[in-house]
Image (cartoon, rainbow, N blue to C red; front, side):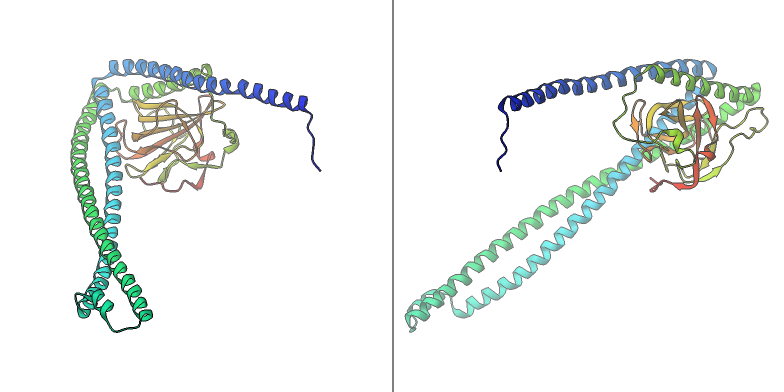
Length: 399
């Protein structure tokens, strides 16, 4: 049965859909503009906050400023080394594939050469004027016609094979050129890597001298305890400022369905695989200060991952914690990742659970490599061991 539509109703429906489409199109564009403006506004606020911190830190000690500079540079070189190593791996894979391709073409060429040699030998035994001989041979016309068809078939096949041989030779030549290019690129990357490693080692020696000078100054002036308290106050002030900034800024989160951070308590994965030191709540040696997080010792360069979705609130160097990343998870929850070697995210970026955000290091003047990890709620430290499950680890922990 054919359904009949009322024409006025159809026109009304089309008009309504058109109005709705026009109404929603600018909204999407406006939302994108709003997101960009909000991100810029957020980044300006965080930049001003960091500048205020830098002024305070520089006034404390010239060694602190030197340490920040050298550790920033170390992080930058380490990041470049990782990029170069990845490129070397890609070039090696490319070179391997090209050599396999060349081998395949050579095998094919060898087979075609054998077939062509047989055909040439057959043609030679039949004589140079094989087609003429067939025409003047004493055969009936039917047989002669069939032989001429067979001759033409084999002749065409021979020409086709010769062309195929030529193509394979050209492919081998092209592959050889590509192999040379890949080899040259690989050599350049190896040389670049050597330069980067040399710079890294020089910076590490400089860092060692700066740390020794800083420790000597602190011991001589009896400022070690004061430094620890100043570092703790600096972090607390930073967290309070971040909370204010993120309260003032409208956060337009990507439209994805996720659990509230509070609901993930006891289910989170640890940010990195390593030797966990449950220091939370313990008193620091020779001080009245207590640990507000945990240390996870591991080799330098191992990847650190976000424990849950959120927005990077801070990604910079801070006295006492070195290269630090702070993620805002909403509802006044923050996670902190300190003493990193390199930072892979910037303030304002959204991250998902398991995203690589940094790599383990010993920045902030630490002797051993490891990650300092905190979870805070409304600025108050939480015991990470109650939030992260001991057996819960992200896959592919190493860089």
